[in-house]
Length: 230
Ligand SMILES: NC(=O)c1ccc[n+]([C@@H]2O[C@H](COP(=O)([O-])OP(=O)(O)OC[C@H]3O[C@@H](n4cnc5c(N)ncnc54)[C@H](OP(=O)(O)O)[C@@H]3O)[C@@H](O)[C@H]2O)c1
Image (cartoon, rainbow, N blue to C red; front, side):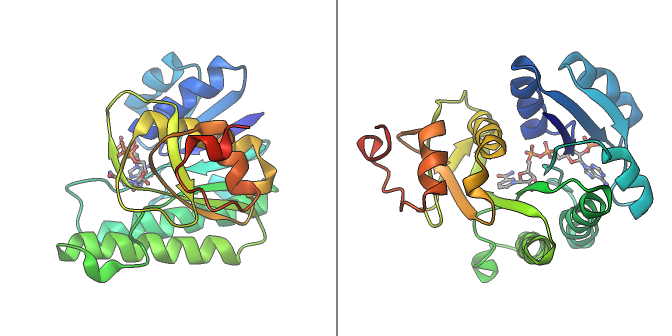
């Protein structure tokens, strides 16, 4: 498979790249800073400089032409204000979706966030703007004629991955290692039954591949390892 990853120099993205290239997939890492190209190339990807807040539709579509799937793993990040939550977290994801449609890349994975359906629980205005931007991105992606899956991780950590998660349409709040988010994204790329699903993700007891298959079958994901390892 050839997979284009937006936000290619991000922490989840680089873990995803390394997993994909290790198993023989081609990765096109879209980065906004030319100086980041050597890093993504050291992970085995091909780097391309594409700033999603300062590129037009044709440029992005051209960059991803030939990919089998795109993953939106970009984000304005901590320290950015409400305005960039809109230009990056919302509009960047929508631009990538429109570019995927134009380029004929049907599969689209959107890394969103838990809590997007409860923006008023946010502890400050910027976080509220982030959750609203992610919610708007989700809505726009669902409206596109694409084979989308929305993944809503809980709070991300840099802890080592465990290979075990809790993945379902609705899960209790929690955190999840970025390593395990990357593992779930790989499994989602392989599992067409998850097309059209919005899935929440936290650390848990279920093996990643089994959890993704169970989610694709519409099983509730009760967190019991025995429920899915069969
Ligand atoms: N942090 C959390 O707890 C949490 C929870 C749930 C979901 N998420 C979401 O999970 C995803 C991955 O998170 P992460 O921690 O891996 O993020 P990250 O390390 O902050 O990576 C985000 C990447 O997006 C890139 N980016 C920023 N603006 C861009 C632009 N205009 N055009 C292209 N790329 C741009 C950044 O580039 P530079 O390196 O040049 O800045 C960075 O490499 C994000 O969508 C995030 O919102 C985060």
